[in-house]
Length: 267
Image (cartoon, rainbow, N blue to C red):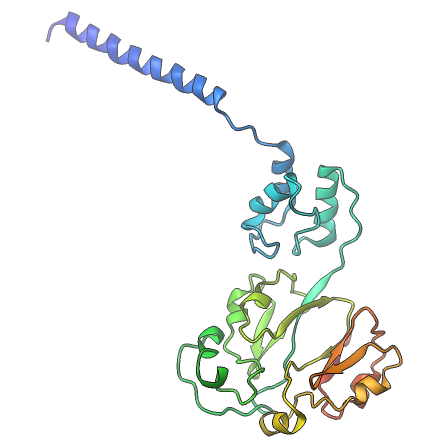
């Protein structure tokens, strides 16, 4: 090839590259999507766990929803009040203190106190086990199956299987709600951290039927309800329930419970 041909080819290639570069530069500016500075600041303020406890697809999804006005500035359960205050400042919103919450497992049916109807030898997963006969091997169809689906779901190592049932570490729990969603028995509930009194049962079976399968369950005797001066306990469908808004954590119900399934959390 002659020198002229080589130079011509170089000019053509160089010119084409220059044209494409200029075209892409102009297009980038023309079609650029502007990023809201508040979005970036909110993403930086969020914990970055991407746990999904807020109901959105990670922290970036929550940030987008907050900027769009579709989510509250205190929607992050992990960050709590400190993060809510930061986001409130970014969005120019006055944020009241967010109440801290923690998960609680409504079951005391340990390996010693709860009977099994048969031996389950399938995949060690609560969701799978709950699809078996009678909702699992446990005699109480309401009880914790103890295979740890909640443990796998928790990104904060705040829940563990101890003696056959799930137990929450209140200090480690961030109330993200993942364990609540994954439990096939609907045994886990988010409660105010300040609440110290809990009913460790979720069974609606009559007393006689329950006692045949579990030594720890609520029999609906109403002694707790009758002795609660704050009227914070009601018994419906053979199960005691505590209203945390009324409960004073006095401990009388725990003392009167003949089954000892009302627990007073120590500080």
